[in-house]
Image 1 (cartoon, rainbow over the protein chains, first blue to last red):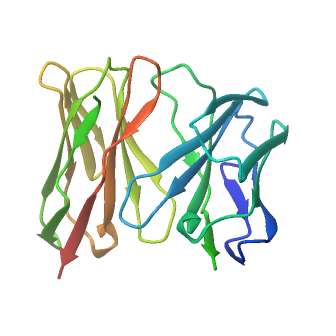
Image 2: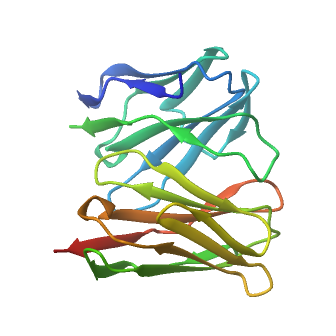
Length: 115
Length: 109
């Protein structure tokens, strides 16, 4: 299995809603990532988990809350989002961190629209 | 600061060859990646260079010159499905991945 699976593919939510994005990989990768990508922009790193521990938080607002229940799963909990948070949210995994050769395998993304 | 430059957009003809350049100034260097991203889809890994020289993989090749802070991605025998954005990314001294803004490649028949 060489895939990263993300659900849902599309999500529309109001500013008062609480929702979650889910990500799963079964490649035995020990690092998992959340990226945010706006149209015509490169991916922007949000969080990195290494061995199920949060290792990088790129000063992301607290309305985004990551969770790593186990080495295969990564969630992103969303609460009180703003319209400018509308974007493609990409989950990725790699064998580890701390190496220049870490190839990222991305999921297909969750397209989020905040009304 | 850290900076990666690549052209915003390029156009090429089906069957031809195109070279997409990437220059970088980063705090340290631990490798350079090229990813392909079709519109509305996730990036997919194309190549990785850490030593100077050319890495060939089928129709795609990637070149690196560390002394010049320069890489290119060469695509041969272009096909319509190669229309996509091509992202250059560099791993810096802290093993953080720094992304370029991407080059949108348009293939015309």
